[in-house]
Image (cartoon, rainbow, N blue to C red; front, side):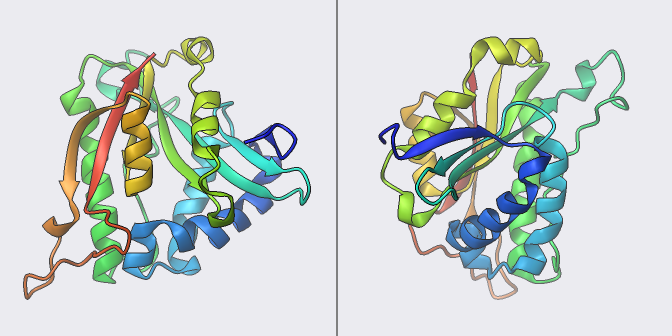
Length: 228
């Protein structure tokens, strides 16, 4: 990536409209689990609405904008994720709004399976790491297809991995449920530890056939973490 091609912008509520269009035009269509489940805009909108509530009010969400077009080329969005059992001030003040991944039309078995896998993995983090008080929760890491293989995801992660800023928010590191093979490889390269994982084949229909079969080789979702 050259500095002349892209520039960082912080994501706030002022960017909600263009960010929503990016997610609907790229992440919805290009993320492997979304493709495999037949996720639609209508299905995806409830998740996006809650995502914006969690991520656009803290300084840990960024986009890379293509200077020539002025359009978002990639984004990383994170929220605060608190261990409520260690929250002596009470969870009611901040709340942990990311405990469930809610999509529209979860009666469609494929979409329901994605929500179940992500929600159950999410619930395991503080069970397996009860010593941690609070982390950043990386919720979205997405690069538009035409801008891939240029190191943009790595640039976004490096921007977000600001240890001093994390300390200001009482975060000891970053954790995430990683659902694409490409991002799983990236996290391993960046030194993230796999806490646990769930195979996609664990969710089957009545005949025993997997509900989610991806077209890019993704066969599991990883729960990863790195301390800073």
